[in-house]
Image (cartoon, rainbow, N blue to C red):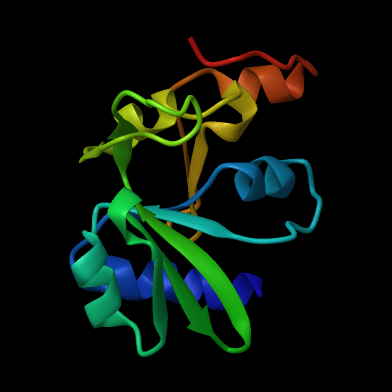
Length: 142
């Protein structure tokens, strides 16, 4: 599964987009644990994601999330975004497509606000998640 997730990141980057592993898989990877799944965050818009991959599902397209099926695995590929207001207290009424730093701010915990580029091996931490992970601290973002 890891190699397939790297191939998806590579496809997105070769098409000129920023693309990283995002959230819990980065946390687990840093801790030396095998992630259960690999979520990918990207600058590619949903239509661009669909155009790049053979088998996709627009399950969360309205929120910028496309499921990519590849090699028998499913990956959530989400456009970097910030959430608007939420009338039901759970799901945003609208999203604004944005950049990685803004996307990190909408996540729950600092240790889930990390991004990792598996090609360049660069960690992107806009919310102090790496220090919190190393110190065993669980903090909400903001």
